[in-house]
Length: 312
Image (tube, rainbow, N blue to C red):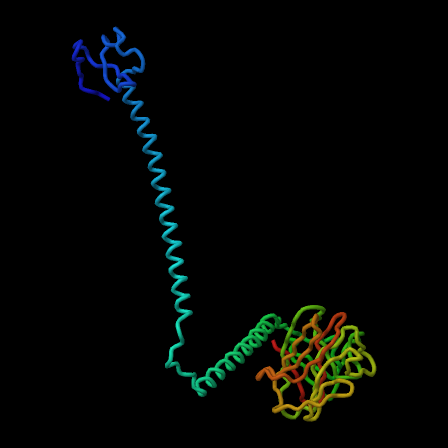
């Protein structure tokens, strides 16, 4: 930093020193004759020292100012909060409006009715969601019929999707898996876990009879077989226009209209086997079963020209 040169009035020498005690500039001659021996610094150093002290004080004052502003703001917020609380208390102490009119009975009933409908809607939506989730969890099974299990009176189509009954039996090779006394055939797909469903086109018309369900894979195939749960068969049947579940004894089924397509749903872990009208979704019958071992789709057919088709 450059300063204009000033001369000592007594010795006409440049003022280069500062007496700290007197806070006055002196020249080198004043210093030499010891007029101001203590408390002296070169002028430039003295000025810088004064600036450093001023800077320190300025920083301290700035910090104090910021803290003061923060305290002020916090206090204002606290006061404002107290004023809001005061308004609420004042309102709470205000008297009720004299001209208050009670809710009309019709409006009150309407509100209660809407609340009731809302509750019913929520419950219906919950059931719908649960049913939808259950439907999504089901796995549509691509079924095929097993020719090695088919009774000789049952003819299996080349794609193994359709079974037809004929009065005249066909000559088939011996198979330990084949039904020999009943007009039955099993599906090739076995289930021992999970959720599965498939559809069966049973048609309508002159068919004498059919049965659709599931059978334990280890069930009997030769000789007399009883189509009941104790023998490992769970099914429903139509016999000459009458529908029944093959329980022991049989359970008659009352249907609004003969189904053309059945949906069979199997939930192995839950032990549930249900039959529904595939076109309307109407439940026809449900078995509760403690399944064990492998389960196979089961079909029985009787009557000239009768046939069943598995879908898909």
